[in-house]
Amino acid sequence: MNNFGWDFSSIWKNAPYLLRGFEGTLILAAVCLVLGTLVGLLLGIALSSNRKVVRLPAQGFIGIFRNTPSMVQLLWIYYALPVLIGMQLTPFIAAVIAFSLYSASYIAGIFKGGIASISKGQYEAARSLALSRWQTLRLVVLPQAVRKMIPPFANQAMEIIKLTTIASLIAYSELVLNTKNVADQEFRPIEAYTTLAIFFSLILIPLAYLTLYLERRFSK
Image (cartoon, rainbow, N blue to C red; front, side, top):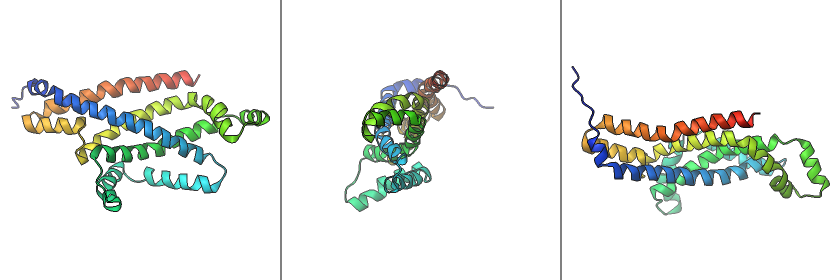
């Protein structure tokens, strides 16, 4: 008969350490979201271009990052890239590069879809006002496209948060790694990993409901 009894005292004792890991997760996710969005915007614009010299490199980049596991990308950037550049990256920098580029490959599709959703009449109106292509994109297309991009963008933010969990592979101090250390040190894996699940639920469940709300609102 299993006589296991729940005891979260070790979790409370290590709460500051776990909260530092939680902070590390949020910081990593936020930085990757910002950088992934900026790179994704450039890729999305490139994908929407009629010029092959602009569009094909973007398609090649996206093909590589979408069709290789994010874990492999992280390990390559942390262990292999330093051999090529002669400089060791910190776990945080390696994770930022890997996750930002991986996320950008999907965010690019969001931007491309948003740009494609704008009617040709908007482009013709901008052309009649003698706006350049960049001015048309910045002043006419993107402001209208953003509304349609918000729901999938919120969903992508959730994916980035989930993605941060594999940063523990390169010893970046985030929530999963810190939780594992507490579980090993205190010999309380059930309580430790239950706490881990609670932490992520507190982030992801509200975001999931927010995504559903945004999808319903902007679909009207």
